[in-house]
Length: 575
Image 1 (cartoon, rainbow, N blue to C red):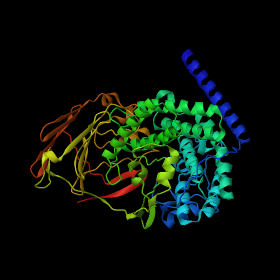
Image 2: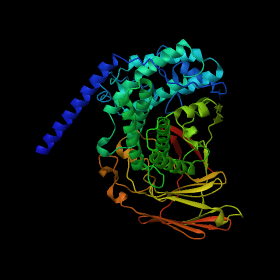
Image 3: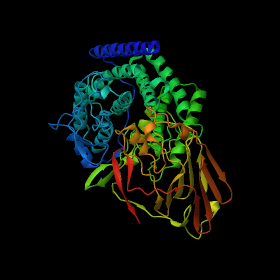
Image 4: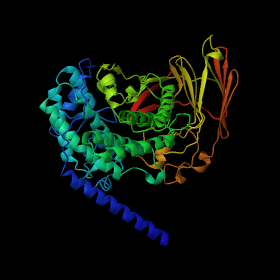
């Protein structure tokens, strides 16, 4: 009883402190600081070639965007102002409450992620870059001014749905910093000066909010906290250069050190991310990359720490590239489509309209960037000289074909006469719990357990994705649930294992004990691979003209629909 009273007192105390800090932030925002100095940075965009589809640009102008699905959503009633608190799918409008209470009234069938995705303001950067290439920058700068003024008016600091998730606040802050740096070019105009002043006045507000609401979750942190630190590092560094106030330099160094500690915690020794989801590894790696740009620009770590953190990033990027196929990641773990920056958006045609291709996000991550010199060098050398026009393809069904099953527990797939074992390479990431056997574009993925239990982890063991000769023989479908119950989220990440979902713990970070204790092993010989997790096993033998599979639990997956990104389904054809 005493413990319950003590915990209640602690919670009331914590909420009171947070509330008072937010009140301070709201009041201080009324007296925005106008930094007189611009950052000394002039970029020449004369060589940029950036050609986005007209339909995408027209959508922004008409306040229609494709977010988390395959339809253009109407975010405005008058075609001028975005409604930042409305879900276009349902018409639900979040009330302008204190951000800790703003989502309490929402019904289960209404997804808060839609306004959050809009509020990241990631569409502004490609909108601006396209205008630099098309030579209509003044018109677009004026429109961006209107969009930001609308956002600021509709979302006072700490109030409403757009301040409810600190991760989204952090991502929005980084996009606003990039937007600010991108207008510091050789072509000075009054419109750019107005936008510059508007952006600079927002930076202290964002830093104050992020610092007061780190998503630490009593130590159960994840990519959200990593993004919080990214926002804190970048804002502190920019504010130090703008103001010259030493307190911001101290903050930038402090948060850079915390960021380094956190990537040591969240990235395993093999380079994989501890959340055991390929898409969350991609998101966290982009967060890692973006933060490094500011760390190197403002010299926020010692030389030895820089060398160490670059080595960690190199391993994280190598892991990511190992599983890429044409810019697409397999759907292992939660398939969130989150990104930090939309520098090179991809598009495809679906249902006779052009939509964002959420399978191919964060394309800039996959380019070879061997030397980190800082954010300014990255903008002037990479972004300002982009030669970019997305190749828009029609949505095509994923073709699956069934292997020739000889009898229960055995199968074979015919390959070709040149199927030599020496041509196949095996990579095994023990911490993540995944192995890949591949040659050229052919590959076999095997999902094991790994060492971490997180809310985004894939729950299948000894399941496969097999891609041979341009055809899938087994395919991870991904998951569609984000707003469903805990049981639905878990069951959507498992194919046919018997798990008692009724008795799942309340905290989604922890898996059932019997699953968390499963152990993996891999045996490799000249032409033979054996994978084991607990009492499940799969043997793969590379033989002349064929691959032989021997198993005690069917490793093949034949979904009806796959979900390559949040709420985005794709047809599957069984041949």
